[in-house]
Image 1 (cartoon, helix red, strand yellow):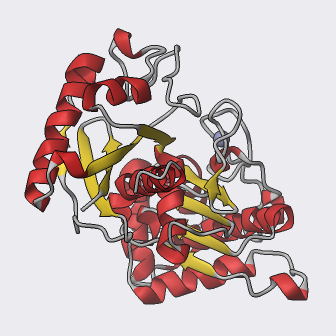
Image 2 (cartoon, rainbow, N blue to C red):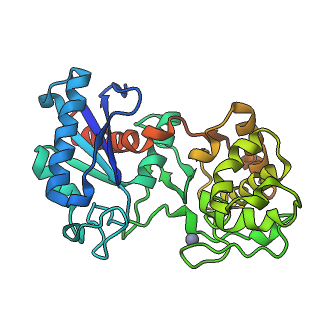
Image 3 (cartoon, helix red, strand yellow):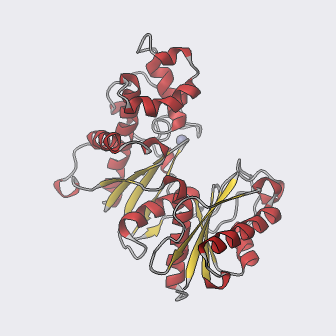
Length: 338
Ligand SMILES: [Zn+2]
C-alpha cells in the first residue's frame, strides 16, 4: 500500500501522520516524538527520521511504502523550505540560519519532501477536510491561537508567495474603527502595525489589548485582580458560560474576523471561509454564536456571495501534520508516484 507521511516539526515535539492514496488517515490522534530542534539540524533531522520509523511501525506500514514526505515547520522560511538567515524563535541553534530543511530531510530519508510553513499547512488541512485533496476550490482559513495564522488556498493550491510569506493573514490591516463598542482602543500588534487582524483576534490581542481595555469598563469584574495574561486564558471558558465581559471580548474578535473575511470575499470570491485554532475549541453552541457574530461583522454582501459558508476547522492538534501530508499527496499524484 503506497502512503505519504506528514511531519509537523514544532519547537518541542514532532507530530506525525500517515495518509494512503485513497486519502485515508492511518493515525487518528497525536503521534509525537521529541523534536530536539535546539540541538541543531543534524540531531533534529536524525530525530525526525527516527520518529517517522516509529510512527510507521505503529501503523504497520513498511518504510518502502512511503512515496513522499510532507514537512511543515514554523517560519520564517522561504516557500521551498530555506529557514531564515536571521534565525527564529523556534530554530535558535546557529546552524539553522539559512538551512534548507526540506533538502536536508530529503537527503536523510531518501524520499521527495514537500514543504509548507505551519500556518499554510493548517489551512490546507482545513481545506482538505471540506473539499478533499483533488479539490479545485478556493478557501481562506484563519487560525486563532497565540497569534493569528492560517492561509489561502486558491484553486486547490496553497498560496506560498514569492518569499514564503503568502497567507500571513494576521498582519492584514482591517477597518477596526467600525467595530461598535471599542471607541478609543489602540490595538497594537507585535509586528508594529496598529489595527491588523492579529491585533484584535488572537490570544495575544486578548492579553495586550482586549482585557486591559474592557476591565476598566466592567467595575468589580474578577479580572481586576489577576494578570492580563492569566485572565486571557480564562476568557474562552467564561465566555462559554455567559460572562458578559468575556463575551464582549469574543464578540470584538468575531467582528474583526468578519471585517477581514469581507476583504477576502471581495478579493477571492472563495468557496469557503474556515475558522480554526484554540479559540473555537468549545461546544457547538458557542461555535455557532461566534460564526453568527463573525457574519454580523461583515458588511452586506452581494446576493450571490451572501451564502459563502463559514466552517470550523476539525482536529486542531493534528492540523499541521495532516496539511503537510496532503501537500505531499498532491505532489505524489502530480509526479505519478501514487
Ligand atoms: Zn501584525
